[in-house]
Amino acid sequence: MPRLFTAIEIPRDIAMSLSFLRGGISGARWIDPEYYHVTLRFVGDVNDAVGRDIALMLGQVRRPAFDVTLDGVDQFGGHKPRAVFAAVKASSALQELQAEHERLMQRLGLGAEGRNFKPHVTLARLRDASPRQVADYLAARGPYRSPTFHVPRFVLYSSRDSVGGGPYVVEAAYPLLASGGGGPAGASPWPALARA
Image (tube, rainbow, N blue to C red):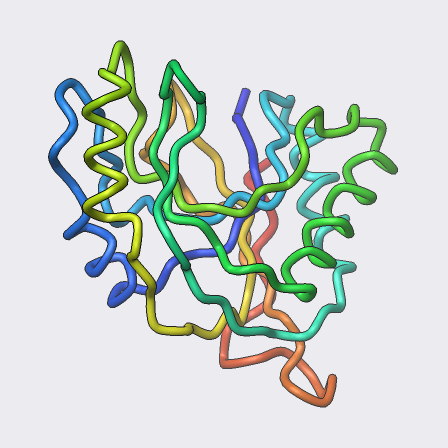
């Protein structure tokens, strides 16, 4: 039974710049740069038939490609930090893409996402991290800002036997429309649907 989620991928050069933010928090489980992504919609554990339905439904998305910038480093968990992340600068195109994924998943009978969408790239998962150490980390690395990068597609990822942080497998890739809506951006082919 695969665990699925939709996401945008982080280009290699941006992932490399994010990797320089690693370190400085005892006991942190740092995400490998090849698994950096921005989750659009977490689906969870589903059977193969539902996975195929999701892959087909996502093929109906017709949204324009857009640009993204990562802007700042922060943490989830407040006084009990559980993750540090690079924040995504507000983008109406990204918000609209995520909202469409949410509507599609609900149309398939999946429950609504329980959390508000806060786009980010998880850098590390924390367990029993010192709030002071996390605050010091954020003070030193908080001003991070990536170059703006283009998002020509979104993907359907799966993960198995993991507690987060990879490994992830691209089950299907969905090109976004080129500027002007004239067809898919880039040369990405339409996906081979999730395995039977």
